[in-house]
Length: 410
Image (tube, rainbow, N blue to C red; front, top):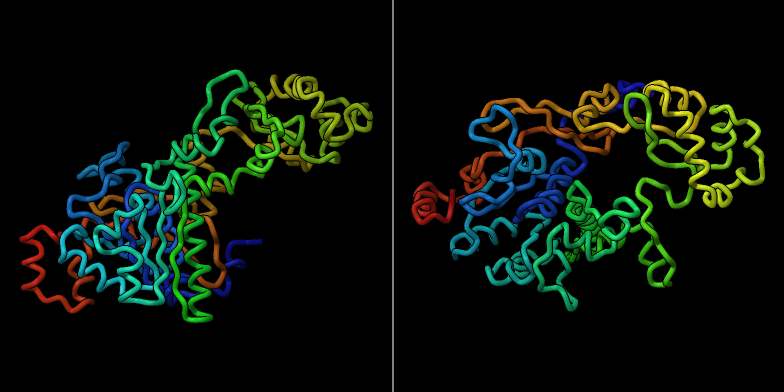
């Protein structure tokens, strides 16, 4: 399909499929902001509330080159498409303004330690008194209940406690965490999905509800069924780049790099055997089925390694594509950012930043043919929309000055 055909009936009169939905986001770092990011990308009006000193994502290196003041990669990526309100929720005036905004919102998202929002007077019970049908999402390391619920929880801890680290890395090496914020990302996605489901329920029967999302639960849900296997004492050895349910499937050396390649189906094996000049193995009963090949991992990996090693990555990927079997180059993010396909998919969108510079910001993953999503605005400066948002609440200039003088507002 051509791009123009996909977007042939696209609308240009709204921001996305969630146009008209307001989200009040009191979050920090990544998991909570990722939930808000997804909803904002989908077109919701997301108001990011943060302390007048700014949250840590504004200060986390590395920074975008040649930006002044320095702009954090975290801030510009996960807080785009939002409005910013600098508000101290620990002070009574900040609490009251938050509750006023919540009363006009559809969703509240927070990711502080369990009990924090309640102590500040802006927890689910407080908001529900003002807005009975509110959808209130709390994201934490271990959830709102359970023996570990009060523990401090961060992304690497959820990866470790879930069992993920035990399987990640080389078989004879140390357990290795994901290089991305995997638990935070999954929690953000599950939170956004849960919020949408709760909004559907609200629209059907008029009821709001409280949503509890934990990083640990999300890692376990996305564990490919390994939690069930663990409960049944099924051994799960660490395999590195091997694929547990297929062989050969690995990262293979080439003359100018590496390629991720292999076969997932028996029909793929027949094509691969022919491609590497071993057609006699295509229907050999010792190789023709997945269980047989898995039992001979080292042997079939050696066959493919012998074939890939003297060739260039590009040639191998092309030959696999022609044969209809899977392969991809092992790239750096620097290389991926320059790939024509990734550019054609709008996964990098040049976006104006708060300092006036332009930066290529990661675009939304889902494509909507009727209500397209995009990076509409860069991540806002701290408190960039405070006046605008308080004007919508009917807060006068004198009160805004008093709030700023007392450091409730920025």
